[in-house]
Amino acid sequence: MRTDRSDVVWATAVRAVDDAQHRTTSWLRLGCVALLWAAAARLPATQLPRGAGQLVIITVGCPMAFIHARPHLVAVLERIPGLRWLADHLFQARGHAKVDLPGLLEAFGALNAGLLFAGPWAVPGLSPAIRSVALLALVSFTWMLFLNIVLDAGWYAPPVPVIVGPDRSTGPPAPFLVVLRRLIPIGASSLVLLIIAVSWTTELAAVPAVLRVSLGLSPLLLQIVWVCFDQILAAAAETVRDAEDAVRKGVAQDLHSLIKNAVRIVANTVEAPQPNQAEVRALVRDLLVVVEEARLELLRGTEEPGPRLFATLWNALVRVLPDGMRGRCRLADGSADLVLSGTDYQLARRVIADLVTNAFKAGAQQVEVFVTTIPDDVRPWVEVQVRDDGPGMPADALADPAGSLRVLQWEIHRYGGRIAFFNGASAHAVESPDTGPGTDTDTDTDTGPDTGATVNVRWRSPQPSSGPPYSRVLERV
Image 1 (cartoon, helix red, strand yellow):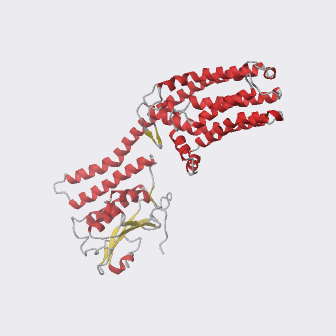
Image 2 (spheres, rainbow, N blue to C red):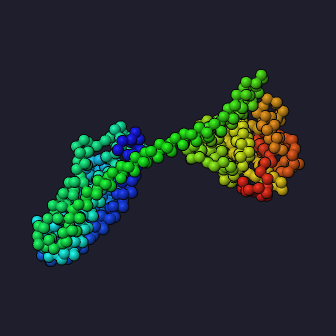
Image 3 (cartoon, rainbow, N blue to C red):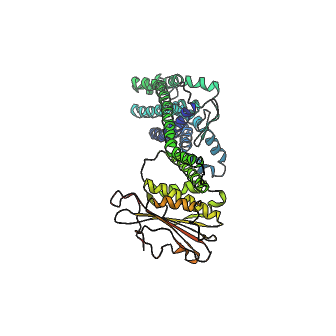
């Protein structure tokens, strides 16, 4: 098989063979071993010790392979005193074309069991039906064993070691192992034919020759399965390539739609004859959050357009804050699961980024954010509240035409909203006594003692109250 995506081919083989197939065939091989023991139990009493002795190796190797196919059981094995070396061996054999202890025990155990029921020294005393069942179980076990060997993920390891997810390759197998792999189907079929197809004893000859020859030739089917598996791996690599192309195009479109407009607004503002520095700072902060949101959405996968959780915005905002501020920024209970429509989401981004940054710049040590919606007959209100323990808001905070609050106020007024701030001990009482949710008024201020501040921003959502339930509406107590 030739493909330039050898890392994808190898990782697919690890997950398909070393995980799924090994787990499935380990159960089936345990069933085959059980059938062998059931057949051996029908031996004459004088032959029972021999039967048990020749089944010991396969009986030890098969459960060990069962554990090998399940990493969580290997981890348990690691905690057993004296078996750490075995757990390390099993871990290191994952995804690598190398000889492992369970494989050796199963291979020699299958050969030893085969010489119990067939070959020149086949044990006497079994009926043709019982011997046929034992041979069928033995060849089935051998077939699944060599299937795992032929399709082992280690054969597909790329020339250069790679890391894909939790898996790490250590390079391609040795050349002599590659040659040995080519000989496995023919060699396995020849060995099985030699042991069971030849009428070594009269009792073995009593088993139908068609059954014995068919079982002996069955390992040749490994070559067909091998070719089909290679084709599946090649198709997987092509599928990944197509998916990556689609993702790249989608990412380009997402970046274009999410960031282009924000960058253009910043550029236009900066290039103005007399740019407003506060507005430039606010726009740059907004752009940082947009970029972080785009990164997080790409990591999660493409999202459908429409309402979004406020938690998404909050995570993006916190990530763009300096390290020293992140641990001092808290989201109030009940705000994370709020769902906002597109316009409300964009406004909330602008408001939160501006107010949180300003609070820390003013000297606050702790900042808390609360977001909710307030029901209304026509359109609900969206309310954002930012509380801090800083020195308080100056009385003329909204009077400075170059200040960021004044720029933010202009934006909020476009949606019939307002900004109110409260200082001092009453900072937690955010409701102005003369302004209700449905009143479109100008800014309210309450300049109490300088022991913290609460900024309350409210606007009408463009989403009608009769429309889809975009928001989790909380009744105000």
